Amino acid sequence: MPLLLVLLFPLAEIATFIIVGGAIGLLRTLILVILSSAIGAIMLRDAGAVTVMKLQRQRENPATILAEGGTRMLAGLLLLIPGFLTDLAAALLLVPGIRHSIFKRLSAQVPTAHSEKPTRGSDVIDGDFRRLDR
Image (cartoon, rainbow, N blue to C red; front, side, top):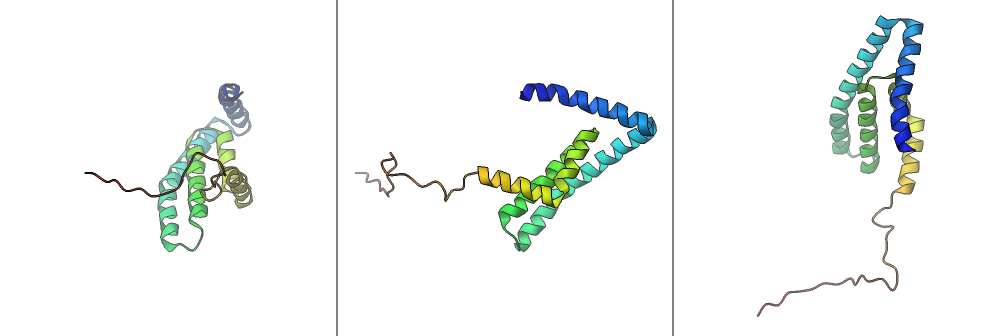
């Protein structure tokens, strides 16, 4: 299934180029593609700096700051890739409500270090040791 999506996605992007180009013209289509790529490059460049500044202020949860920074970087990368479907996906990632619902879904699937407790009868023995050399 993922291989089929990888093969069909470029075809969908080409079809979208043809439809948009027919509706608004070739020159305007090319200008939109170049403009979205430039915006993506700027977003990708600035996302790291914004994330570092927010982490230094530490007014929010660091995991939330990093997740939002990663989302901005992914949106910038999607804008950098030529195509209207990737631009649409990037725009959806930048909508706060959609971004927060994605965070909730992903955070529910990612185990935390505190959630993994050894069960009774496991092969793990917690303790300290000291090496004694003679």
